[in-house]
Image 1 (tube, rainbow, N blue to C red):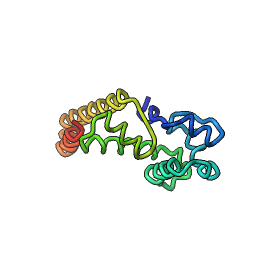
Image 2 (cartoon, protein in one colour; image 1 turned 90 degrees about the vertical axis):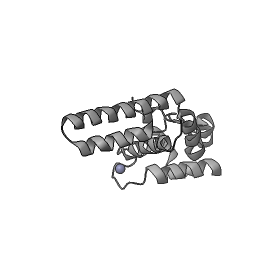
Image 3 (tube, protein in one colour; image 1 turned 45 degrees about the horizontal axis):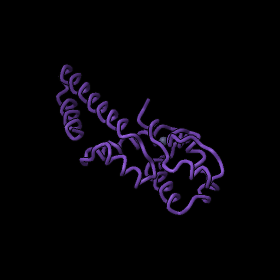
Image 4 (cartoon, rainbow, N blue to C red; image 1 turned 45 degrees about the vertical axis):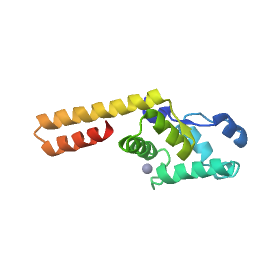
Length: 150
Ligand SMILES: [Zn+2]
């Protein structure tokens, strides 16, 4: 399961009651996005929540794909966001706090930790393969990225 399947909407119950509808707790599930970003629903949210939802839309759903928000780009951008937080020196608990402040989302720190470990392992594998292949540039790039995540 991808990390984006384990990102949840904070205050999920409260939001569901403001919207008078139920939706999945997983923020990146198609059904949750369809409910949260429907114009008439946005209007029902309190100001603080609406701001966070709009920030999320602006930061992760700003592509022009016809299938938006189901095109995969929001997930890709969110993964990049998590990696950037790690690169800036944050650990899993702090990353969870920041996503809560920024977008009213939460995840379990253990899931964030596994995601970061997996990312490091993937970069290690890329580095090894590129070395074997004589692609020093690719290997170097993977090494740099990996070191930023440690
Ligand atoms: Zn897209």
